[in-house]
Image (cartoon, rainbow, N blue to C red; front, side):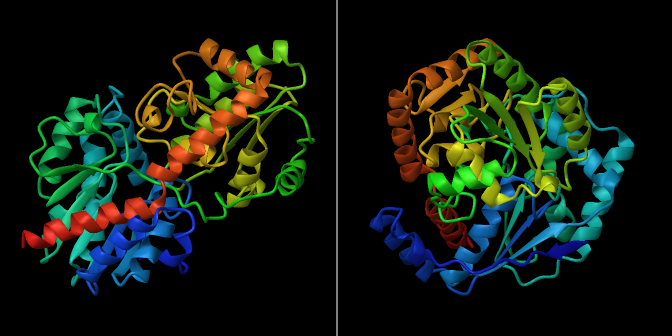
Length: 412
């Protein structure tokens, strides 16, 4: 079944102070031609990942400019999320695919969700593989259907990709975060639209150094202590074990440095708990390593405080669809060290707004440079913030969706 997600109110006018005026004007002009259209977004979870964070802002902003917009999540038993996690990993290159029983579970719960969909929508935006089959089971119902893929599908498991392609081709358009992610063999029209962050959300609003210190001190981080930080799900693709190894190298030169690994446990990621356990085991009894989740009362404000307080921000992914945590870190005007993969190089200009790394040793070396060169690091952080302002804030993403809606409407 599909369950509605309730969101708060957002106003486009509030963003006029952080983005260019011509962008706001372009959005309003596009919205005038789309007022009253019904839009539905569907994904797999209402918390614990970048997609949900985007929708908590995008949906109310669409409403604010006159689009009748809803958001629903697909509800299914644990076995469904286990199967779709295999699918997610396979699309990112894992050789392990889906067996026939997993495919049956996947198809059954998409069919049940489609039966609860209802009609009357002008545009249905389906996010990621979990609810992908909705279009197949629901029919077009007079709507334009868009599949939005948020993951790195540059080198997918071909068996799983070939299984999904006929379902994707039922869509009127598909969106990928990078050109290299566009699946080979896809026949439906494709677009490249990069994700974005909300600069006014609790996670990204400006915090004073005193407020940030106060919050992280509640978790035992003392002022002036050098702090390395990675914000990510506990997932092998995010490489928290490699971050711990890099920290251990840095520790040899900076004895007082601490490491915080902060992640959210999501309902659509059953693998997360087992990898969380592996991460804790890898950290061992080192009291200078903090491993925190939303279950430790670490919410958006706390994440903001950790990012604002940290000296070195890391996103050492080995595969990454885009990595919104990179833009979040850069928005705090902090130099950010990221894996040289996926969407991270689009956000980090190596040596200018942060550093791109390919190994644990490179990660450690760049962390030590940031700690050794605070003035140059601050300048790098300021450059990173302006790069995000120009490219990765939510009004730009809103504009891109409106342009696609307008194009599809003209094709009717």
